Length: 568
Image (cartoon, rainbow, N blue to C red):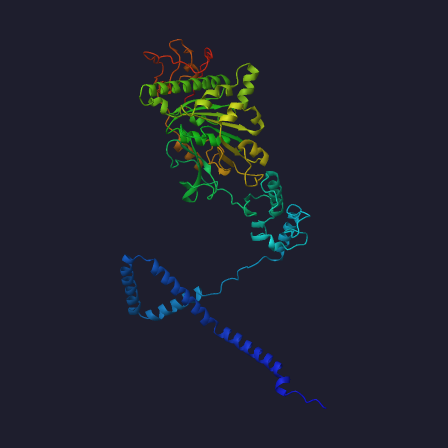
């Protein structure tokens, strides 16, 4: 039987359908091209209407009446002006066309270069996140990287700025060594020279790596909004602390997240230790602390380097002495130990008698010791005691006596710090470039970021007691007498300096211990800070204070050397 041919409509239907679709698509494209201006204006009018509706909803009810009156007045003026409605219509169409213009295409996925970088990072993590006994490993050579990397972001140069990694539960994320290996690998593969933050979620088996922006260096020394007993050590990331302080930066006034150190009888970190490389900013940190302490207390400065970095504070009101030599440093610290004992005894007697503590025992006393290792070396060569031994009483009993000790040293001399200094300085700061091992040796905990090899002065890490390790940028407080200091920073520091003392006795602190003055006119046992600040030059008080019992054995007569602080 011969086969009948298929109907023509069935044999040529697919070709006709395809031809019809092509005609419809061409007509739609042509219509879109012709109506594109109208589509753009319509989209712009819709956006302008949505904006007007949002502004009207945000306008308070008591201001809606005046707003309507103002709009009606504007419409009336436009209607009365010649060609006003036409100009208004043209302006509206132009604004709608600009508002409804096409936006650039948003990138929705990684390009080829970024995919290659993610694949390389995935292959590098396979030896650390896989074991042979895993039946369904998340990380395998040649595997799918999209299952392990849930979130990623790149900068304009194609380098990773954020990456969220899912790792298997059997990875030992609780061991610092294992975590350090992963952080080092991610740091090397993602690009060096930047500071990365690693957030480990042990409960969810997730690791988020993000690039931290550089901390601002535009904040100079100034009066910070704090209460007595609070000191701003520097500034950190916004999500690291809960407190901000208003500051004046180069680009105006802003609220900056500050690392605030609290001292006094209720402080758990009454003393501070700062360690850094040469030129890292430890001296600027001590200058900043001194300028913040002077409005509410007295400051005693001992500079072991002898470079005159604190000459601007010499002779200022509230600065008891600025000692650079070994003899003056020993005498000053010996007096500080006796002053701490005197405060403790006076406060104890007042409490036993039911009276408040004397006023001179409540005024804070700050002891700033810069580079004690040099003074210890000189003391050992001269057969004299190490100045750090004289800090035992202020360090152990300073919190109750309102005495705060701040010690700054460099890494190359950190081994010269005494055990007492290391034990009682619970607030720690590391400035300048340092390895993670060096940072952990000082702070007691490794940072969650990767230190960069080159940092500006004053950049480092801080840890208060057992708190987290925070990034830190110390406010710029340079020596105003240094020729390399900029004029703006010089004026900022000079504006914070107290007035110089006029006709006030500059008795050497070394004479304020057991013994006599250099001229033999007055024998004293222990003289308070208020006595030092109120004695006139050459004057002799009517009666010396009653000798107070000591908490420690009598160290013997003070040296005859009586250095006098130079007048500015």
